[in-house]
Amino acid sequence: MNPKHIYVLMVLMQVAMAGVAQRRGQYGTIRPVKTDTSLIVKAYMDSLVACMERIDSVIEMESFYGQIHPDGRHYRLFAPLTFYHSPASRVLEYAPRTVVDKVVDAVDATMLHIYLNRPDLVANTESRLKKVGTIRNDIKEPVHHNIEFIDKVGSVPDEPVYVPVEVMVKRPNFWTFGGDGNMQFMQNFISENWHKGGESNYSMVAGLTLTANYNNKKRLKFENKLEMKLGFQTSKSDTLHKFKTNNDMIRYTGKLGLQATKRWYYTLQVLAYTQFTTGLKSNDKKVYSDFMSPFNLNLGLGMDYSVEALNKRLTGSVNLSFLSFNFRYVDRKRLAKSHGVRGNHHTLEDFGSQLTTSLTWKITDQIRWQTRLYGYTTYERALVEWENTITMNVSKYISTNIFIYPRLDDSRKRDEDWNYWQFKEYCSLGLSYQF
Image 1 (cartoon, helix red, strand yellow):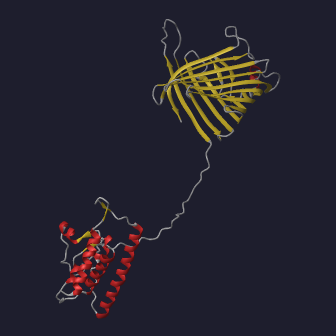
Image 2: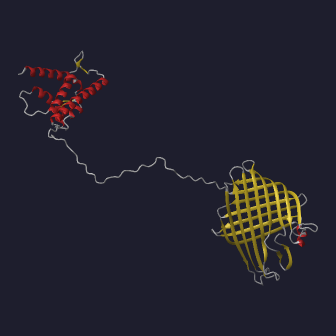
């Protein structure tokens, strides 16, 4: 055997022994050699750089001689370090090779260099790999993949990062509008021989309420309410009038408030009311009232309390006007005296105090009670009106109304039976609508 081959064989045996053997302890136990991981990684990276330089030099030489083989024969340099048989076989082979592959020789020489200098980096052997699965040696040529494009996707246009957005800021609307209307009918038939007497009659009453309120949710509010009612009735006993009014009113209530506390407001209240047409009595030609006869205007300065109770089922307001100015105008001069105007005048002015309470109690979803208590006094005369309307909804558009209206006015002539009290009441069934 050639002495050179014997020397290489001895070196390989030493490398194998150094790579497999471990440092033995005092009692023959195997102790792993402690190595610095960072140094190992650095040394491995340095070896890879050196290998790449050698491979590049080989490729340059092959390109110079016109023999370029860009294939995957360099994988051993970059795969986990494995002890392959070919580097040692090529060194120990006796007969000269007929086919020389410079790339394979360079890779084997590089692997042998690593085996001799850094045997501790060898993680696996070719024998173990063959037990797991054979190594493919049949691939001699590089594998090229043909990629077929089915659809060519066009370039996506660049879009600006910030897209301008049109912002529209609306001014808050502090106004709320509402209202309700109703038309009620009543028919009463009594035969002429009815044992208790009486007469047949027909009656109708219509009402409309409109509201327009302003509240800026800070300190200012402005409330407006317009109420209109007009009713007629007929009776056989009245030979002078085919029909006459039984309910006639036009009333406006306005309040301008400046908030003092959570529920109290400093308030200026305006109250104005008159009627649509003439007021008559059965079998009497005399006209007792008419449009603008009288017309009442009341200005009150005071405090207003906002009511909200019973889980918001009871709502409304209570207005106390400590200083109130009342103006009364009677267009028909011959009616002036009966409405408190003295002398040959059309007007009456006086000062006093007033109380106005307006509440709505939603007892159930079908029953609602609306009440208004108004009182005015000059400390010489007094006027008290208490209007009560109980509405019972039969359906969404059909309802029954019960209206009860007691009134006290000591400026009028005293009646023997009722004293200064007056009273009105009716019950009706008809149409109603809220909006």
